[in-house]
Amino acid sequence: MKITVKNGSDLRPISGDYSTTTLVELTPDSGLGRIPSNVVFLIDGSSSMGGDKWSTVKQAVAEIIDSLKDDDRVGVVLFDSGSKELFPLASLAQNRQVMRDAILNLASPSGVTNLEAGLKQAYGAFDARSSADKVKRVNHIILLTDGFPTDNQGYRIEESLRFEQVVRKHEHITLTGVGIGSADDYDSSFISKLSELGRGSYYHANDLAKFKQGLQEEVQKLQSSVVGNLVLKFSEINCKIMRIAKVAPEIVIYDISGSKNAFELPTGSMTKDMTTFIIQTSHQGDGQVGTEITLFNLAANSDGKDSEKSSIKVKTTDRESDLGQIDPDVFRAIQMLQVHLNGEQIQASIDNGDKAKATRLIENTTKIAANLGQAKVTKALGQLSKDLEQGKSVSDNLATIKDEAKKTRLLV
Image (cartoon, rainbow, N blue to C red; front, side, top):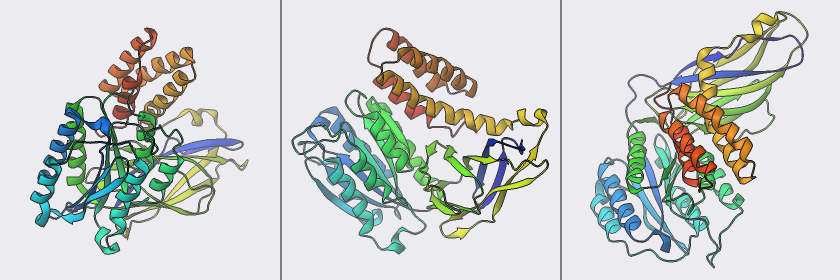
């Protein structure tokens, strides 16, 4: 594993608090081949999934089972008022046709949306396998839902902590959320948040063509994976780490473990493409000119194999002209992350009734996205602005922005 690091600026002020953004690019060793996957489909089988949605979901999952390799394992968990495991994680070499036929012959959906039971059973499918079965594999859950989590009476559950805790407990298993249908009918903020905690992708499938496209993109990532578990290892931390985010091939913001001298951060699987992170830190100058300060040391562990350690350093300066410089690659990565973060701020402003703030954020984000060449994000922002002005629902626009702003594969 090759690690390349660069700071937005290597020169920082001699006194006071300063912030540094470090770009970390990880390139897998050449010659690594595709690794197999353990994939569990977690399918919403509640009554709202009926009609065209249900037939399309069945057909799409059957097609994915067809397209995966013989050495991949697939499991299927269905949740409605409860949950049940249709198939444990099992090899496609022996079970492909049986799985495919069973999916296509699923009975019509019914009941409420007990997502908590579904999540626990989906993660339990991995727990049932031995530790050796999960090494050097992509361990992944794909959640397909069109609704809000509900209790046994069908009332929406507003509090999300119970679901987040289930995902947080399984940090070596990634989760991608697919919200099916209009974002007025499912909680896009909740599904995208769950996907971020699960270190996975998020797709807003507000039409059935986009649903199939999203699943195809997931399969492509699975088929191009060369590392099952990439872990960032921080040591000798001499600063406050403010944020850690993956910015390519897609954006994921990670929970930070707090003020520690050392910690490890599982980040999920890795494809043959370069994977890029930004790490934002703060530190205080020591009052001396020319002091070299080590912010932290970093190594990457890929499926149990450690890379060489990199030391991230800055030097203090008292020249004002030194402090305005910023590396263009780091600046571009910061802008990509900012578009993603602004989507959350726009939604919060709209939810709080602050239309003026939302409009300012939309204008600013549109400029950044246009400069980055994010055409789909720019288009969704333009439609959002129009619909907001006309008093129309903006849920689908916001969900599309969250979906498209995460996809940075072609921008780096």
